[in-house]
Length: 387
Ligand code: GLA
Image (cartoon, helix red, strand yellow):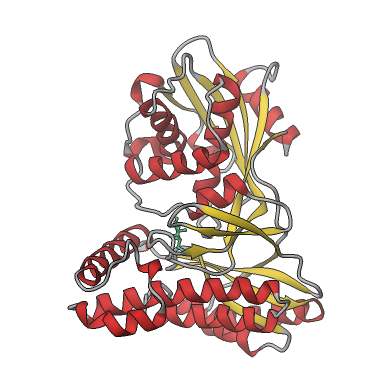
């Protein structure tokens, strides 16, 4: 990959002399979905796939972007004086948003950049190509301009830029997983205070299989923001009767005892998911520590059902993938992963069942949905780095 982006850089901008290459990973979330903006727990891991950038400082204020994933767009030009979101800027709104967010914090770039990007996260798969691009941008800005920020700051800046520059009110999970990834470990993160622990996820005799539905419904961002405000409203209603900062502060019992305060049935379902999913996540990590992979899998399945029925962020295609996975012998657990409305499922599958899994789930998906699913046996990788 390093050679590929360097070669492209030379081809596009004339020479690859003095060019640095960086990488930041995508992520898959094992459990703890739609809890990160509710002060709950998440359990994601960084992947070995992600986004690469070849970058060189310029002597003027210009920014030139080129993505090998969108070659037909050619070089997209901008400048440090134009760090405002625009439709024409397309994917460059992500790096520009991060540059803007650094400037907001008083870290201003004193010259522009030439950039070539290349990512190997499948587009629209829900494996956080945008968070990887944000963390990557922050990482090379720190390296090239000497900005004093930690990796956790990179996650916060990425989230801030996505919220305030790109209009997606995401939580911190994706950026945190990318910025703080650790090989063979998932990250048990409490989003209420950003305390975290690494938990080894070397599955004895099993693999993590990500199945791409290859669908992405246009609802993703709009419905995401709707869910978020539904939870905020439910929280306000609950705060009238119980002292909490976020839905993640409630146990299932406390929720049941106070849920009458929520004046709308739909909102009550959303809040129920947030509360129960948080508790499931805590229990799942405990199960993993006790080597109880069976329980971990059952909690993953329950997470899917809750996201499908109570949170309503699944879709027919993803439900087919999960249901068909549950039927295969050797599948320990399977669920939707990420924001929802398409994207991927994540499954834990016994080594000897992986081939069967691909054949059976793939065939059933083709038959029931009429589309082809893609399967990736993923590895858990480290966070961002200079190559
Ligand atoms: C998206 C968001 C995350 C998180 C997940 C759902 O990936 O970017 O912050 O909320 O959805 O768990």
